Image 1 (cartoon, rainbow, N blue to C red):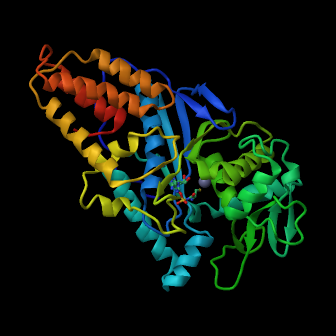
Image 2 (cartoon, protein in one colour; image 1 turned 120 degrees about the vertical axis):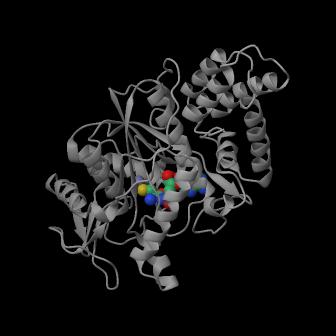
Image 3 (cartoon, protein in one colour; image 1 turned 30 degrees about the horizontal axis):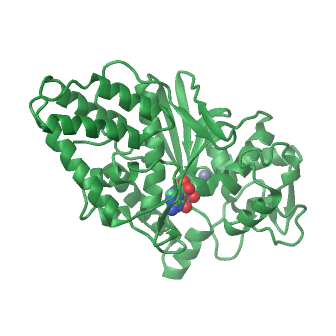
Length: 407
Ligand code: 5CA
Ligand code: ZN
C-alpha cells in the first residue's frame, strides 16, 4: 500500500562506518555485514489507536540504522508491515461500533502523517496483512507439507517441537516463554494442544469475524506467520535485521524465526534481531491496552516534531525509560541552541565532529553520544569561535542526514 513521502537527505563528504548492533540472539554487539543492499524488516503497528511515543521511539531507532547504512554507502531495502487484521483491532472496532477496515485506514493515515513529521525514511514496501493473505496461506501450506502443523477445532497450529532452533532468538527459559506467551496474545491454556507453546498459524472463521477463502479453509492468519510471509516475499531469507520493540522478542520474533527456518530449511531467518527499549508513562509501559499514552499526533500540535525526535534520541534506543514533559523541554532548548549555532556565518571546523557523529552512530546507534559532539560544536560556535565559514552548513547537513533533524 501507499507509504509516506521521503525527506530529502543532505549529502555528506566521504562515508561512515558500517554500523555494529546489539543482536538479541547473539547477546552481544556485532558488526552488520550487509551485501550491496542492506535488507531491513521492521514490525509495524496494529492500527487500532494512534501512534504513541513508544512506537515512535522504535521506528526512530531503525531510522537511525537506515541512515547509518546509507551513509556507509549501502542501499537499503526497508520493509514494514501493518497488522490490519488481528484480535485487538477487531475488539476495538466492536467496542466502538466501527467497521474494522475504516478504523484501520484512519489510524494508518495518522501513522503516515506522524512518521513524515518525524522525518522517518519511508519503507520501500509498506505492506498490509490484508494485502498478503494468499502468500500467508501458501506459507502455512508449506509448513503443513513439512509436517510441522496440526489442526485443532478448525484452526491450524505450528508444532513448537518441529522447530530445531526454537528458543534461539530469545534465549528464554520454558517458564519465561510460557508466561510471556500468555501475556502477549498467545493461548498456552487451550485444551488439545500438543505443547502449550504451539501457536496458531491460521484461525478458522468465527461468526462476525472477517475471513478469507484459502486452501486451509475460510479463516484469517495468525499474527507471527504474517511477518514471516511478508519478510520472505519482500526480502527473502537470511536478511540483515529484523527489528521491533523488546516486547516482540518473545513470542513474535522467536516464533517467526522458527516458521522461516522450517519453511525454507535455512538458518538464520534474520542475521540479527534488534530490539528497542520500552517507553513508559507514569511507571508503566506505554500500551494501547493500558491506555497510558502520549500520542505523537497530539504532542505535535504544540511541539516541534524535531524536538520530539531529539527528546527520544537523548536516551539509547535499547534503554527502557519514562517519558516526562521535562525531556521535551530539554530537547527544545537543545534544538534552539543548534539552530542558533548553524545560523551563524561561521563556526569552529566541523570535520572532526562529523567523524565523531559517525563513530558514535556506528557503535550500536549511540545517538546521545553523537548529539554531545554537536552540542560541543554549537557551544564553541556560539561562544565566538568562527574559524570556518563552511562549518555551519556541514553541521546542518550531518544533523539532517544522520540524525534526521532538520535545523
Ligand atoms: N503489529 C505488531 C508487530 S507485527 C505490533 O506489535 N504492533 S504494535 O502497534 O503493538 O507496536 C508497534 C511497534 O511499536 C512494535 O515494534 C512494538 O514493539 C513497539 N512498541 C509498542 N509499545 C511500545 C513502547 N511502549 N515503547 C517502545 N516501543 C513500543
Ligand atoms: Zn511483526
